Image 1 (cartoon, rainbow, N blue to C red):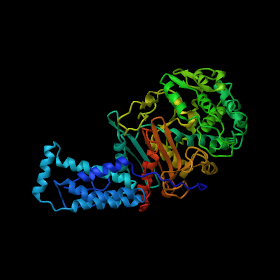
Image 2: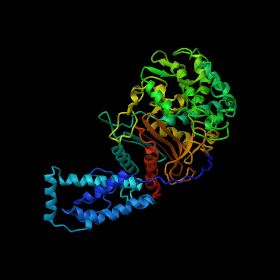
Image 3: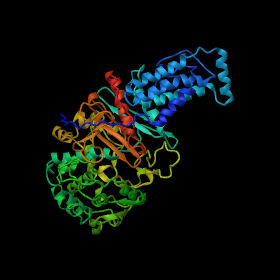
Image 4: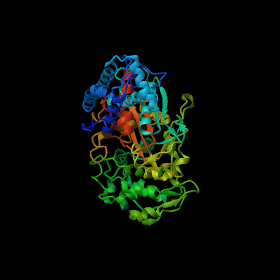
Length: 577
């Protein structure tokens, strides 16, 4: 049912191992004195650990000798990580085994180590467990989440180990859901405000909203309410009129806008510039609060202020721009029943000129009746079937109001959580108004369970749009300009995204999935179908400090682990953010 075009290859020299991780590994192996056998990177608690290997118990007061013996092996492991991550786990095991078998220490010598630990006011067991935990952590970083000698054939437990580890390393909340013919589950890790994360927690999914919006457009086309290859301007202009604005697509973006079609908007091939640039994002956050609502027109004005406003002629390039999906929101708005505008009155006509002054004029006090652009019909893309226990009660498309009232997990937008010296610019997104999210290009609030199920229904069960619509949505072409070039191919609301730096965005290439990523204020998410496993997933974290974390680390490792557990195959997938 799905027809995919091959993407251009991407080869990357990005180092797999951060320097900090390498130093932690050296320090951990220099300290470790194995009285108990080292466990593999399963992440299990002490009473659940599955032993990967065991060597003779040992202890040594001469840590310098141990360091000198292990350092060459560790150095080799770090070097190998940049070339063939699949071998790193074995090298780490050999390094640790070398420590364990280096000496046959006497009971008296082990007692001396215990005495030293007690004098340091820390038990010997704690010292060992800390060192072992560091080795396990780095093994996951270097090995791409692959257990080289898995003892426990259980997808859930290994994925739980993965997200628990990454949650601890990053200090973030993570939710992961999986749907296949044989299994369906949700796993969580981390704490928020002193409580553990729950499978029912609601996150923001950013551009993970775009497939839902695309499905709404495809359903309208199936019903004969619009034509995919029809011009966008008449419908966009009608949507703007219903918002109370005198702006038009032509006034905002110039004469070339008259040639843009609905398909161009869906396919990211309109050539229109993106509103999503740092100056505009910062302005929204500085101006935004729970008492201010931003009109969808403000996002168009942000894009219209970019020069050039077109990166290419319509249909002549594929370049990622969220402006396309804000315009599709106006297309959907034009299809709603024509009722009087409410929730703030007409937007000042001066906004059609663009610029910061026009954007400020568009701010609307919060509160009052529902806004005209709420578009409850977006829920039409979420199927309800009591006979199959199919429903989406927690999924919402937010228009305004404090984000904290619509989500149960608050996101942190700003500097990395692993950068302890400067957290002054970390912003709590819960206090912001939901209208900063970009309307139907990024306003989905949901659980990972419902998002993973949506993609299952769309791409496997085929219950959301027709087979022909899915074919159109998955007719992919590589992004040729700007963000995502080389590792993303785009269809019509669906992307084929490569999560491993060592592979291309091509159908059949391990590490790639068909779905959509999301990066919004305080949240990162990835969701879609893994074709080789015939399974859908959704994973989200409540920090956008590192753009590559959820895709390049989490999702890549999820695919690698699942290939072992589902297919019994170690695909040696290099991962790293």
